[in-house]
Length: 226
Image (cartoon, rainbow, N blue to C red; front, side):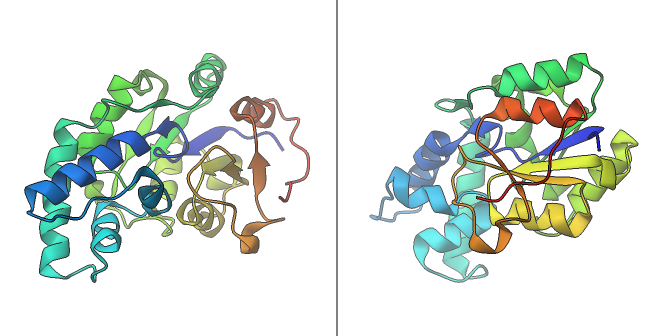
């Protein structure tokens, strides 16, 4: 089966946003008067679940705790102003998106990142021109692992969801792709989270981003484990 459209996660999949997230969460902690600071490696496994989840995990508090909400709102305000000062696209991303776009393959990005920051990052990284659709929960959709953003993206691209590939790096992405019924669900090895055992054998392992071109060529083999 040849994949007719691609749906990509953003942070950890298209863009190495970890340095910016790390810098901005520490700036938000300082702005909120917290003495605590977190390391790059402490932040890494927290990327992908959205800014409110990040704030809760950093503080060790519940999602709806007042201090979580204060840090979350402060972080989103700071991040919206400094979303792309340190990050960069992962190797092979620009070349792959360019090649897919040249073939007329529709491309979408679905992310937990707030819409304003998403737009700034995609522009700053030079990825916006390749994308036909870009969605965030702020656009009125449930966060991944809910399939809502993926289904909406496929609809906007006018491609059946079964003919799309979901490409991500976290359990949120993989679960969303499986729930949506994507024809291929791909985990990128350069991302921020390891491949969970429950998804091995159920998703395609992508060690080189340019491997995705084979899916659009109709040369896809059976999904690989890892």
